[in-house]
Every structure is written in C-alpha cells, then in structure tokens.
Length: 342
Image (tube, rainbow, N blue to C red; front, side):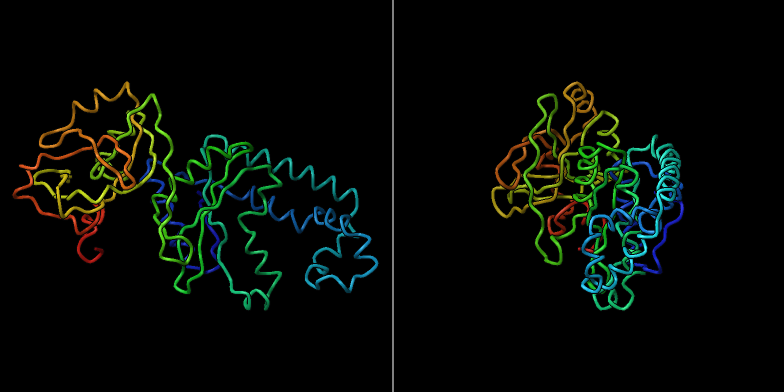
C-alpha cells in the first residue's frame, strides 16, 4: 500500500480503504508501505504527454472536418495533440521506460499493491460542473495501468453515507490475472458486502475440493484473523470461502480459554444456519493438526446449506449443558462483536 494516499478530502474512501487493508491482514497478508510516485508520474503521461496524439490520429478525418460535432470537453482534451511532435513522443517513451524500471523494482518483492480504485466518487451533476478536473481525479489510481503493462482488478469495498460506492484495486505485473482473481475473491468474501445497493447477499458455487487436501469447515478461533488461524496457515491451508451450515445446528460459547472457543452441536429440531469458513488443509498436515484438537471438540461431518458435507469441528453435546447458547448471533464473529452489533 502507498505510504501516502490522495483522497481529495473524501473520508468515506479512506475508511473503506483502511477496512480493506485490515481484512487482507486478517486473511494473513502483510502490509508494507511503498512509494507510488513512479506510477503516478506515469499516469500523468496519459493525458499530459503525447499519448493523447494517438486519440487524435484515430479520429483525425472527423475532427478536421467537423470539429464542432465533437463533444466540447473531448475536443478540448484531444485537439491540442495536433501540435505534438515526434520528438515529444520519443522523449515520453524514454521517460515511461525509466518510470517502469523504477515501478517494477518497487513491485518485484510484493504479491500486489493495493490502492483505492478512485480517490472519490461524484454525482453526474458534480462531474458536469467540473468535468476535466473530476474525471482526472477518477483516473488518479488507474491511468498508469496500461502504460506500465500491469494487471489489476477492482473490488467493492463499501458505500459512503450518500449511498455512492467505494472500491479498492489490487494490481501486479503482467499476466498475474489469476493470482489477483484469487486474492480479490478472498477479499470480497471477507468484506461480506451485499450485491450493489441491494440487501441481497452474493451466492457463488464453492471451488471443487483439492484431491490432495482435506476440506475443513471452521466456525470459531480458527477463522481468518482470529487467534488460532495460524494453525491452518502455518500448515499451508488455503482459504476456500465463507458459507453457512444447513439449518440444523446450534452454537455455544464454551467455558475456558484463552482463546475462547465455540461449540457447534447438531440438533434434531430448532437449529439454524450458521456462518463458517472453508479451508483446504494439505493431507500431509492433517495428522499434526488433529493431534492438537482438544476435548470436548472433535472432527466430525458437517452439512452445509445446499447439502454438501465437509469435515468440521463438532462439539460433544454433554459439554454444552452450562455453556451460553449464542445461536442467535448467527456466527462466532457476531458473538465477539457483542449484543450491539447483533
């Protein structure tokens, strides 16, 4: 993530970006400060440099014959490119190559760089009042992507009080698309946002099980960002996604700790669907992991919403007699957040 970020005074973008950073760190990521200035310098070349002449060349016949027919703002941006020279173009290419060498050096030790997708979002009436200035701001964190030959993906990250969306962008070198898609999927799942401005939750099929791994559901301290998650990540377990159980379980807060642990118990009636995370644990690590599972917990078979069955921590029913029933919170995270959040 950049050492300094430009939000143009937009506190909602700052909050959504910081939330995404926290979610990525909870998933096991390590945040490092980097200098984004070479990328931002390259971004300025897109419209302030001779690359705009490529746009002029593409519509030269039209703009020469009917300049008045062109949208005024578009004509204002493209028109001056006619005065650009071949010398300008070569100088800019050399400048871009120098910036790319510097930017690639910064990117080399990282899996990806995270920025806001845009520093702010504007209504159409606001954009109409200052089109060049505000459109330039919208491209602040993206105009360098094509010039530097980077791959990138934008992920929804929340809404501001006015209801306008915010997002973050993950970018890396060329041909890193599949890796970025995987990171983006994990981030989007962790943020748990609804579909757009609706209250509907996204529903996606889970990836197929890895034949060299045990698919394990966790519902408590082993979840992303919680105290025992390292027992999975240190063994090479891979996060698959978040989902819910079938509506036949109850959740209890067991005595003891730290860390505190939940007990998930299957019931014949009065159950609920509860939040769980799925992880693929390499088969070679299963034995060592199971050896550390304390009573009254054990590994059993859990039914997910939709009917799929996976292995999971299940609790002996006898241990829940004096435990607090926290099923109404819907998840261990909901319980940890407390009654106000629930």
